[in-house]
Image (cartoon, rainbow, N blue to C red; front, side, top):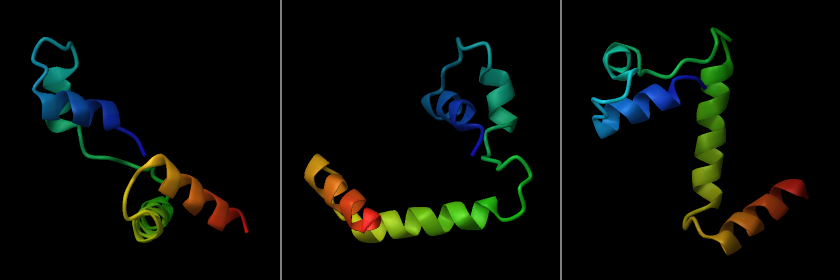
Length: 69
């Protein structure tokens, strides 16, 4: 997923950043025009959120180990 840096620059209002003006209109994420990438990313985020209710080291390790099995 592209444009995370531009989204962060815009969100933080980093007006001194040379990319700030560009970020105002170019901050929406894109997936390099791969047709199914956005739906696959959404499914991954959904599964992650289901398995990791609390984002701490122990829970993250447990979710990773479950996925390996």
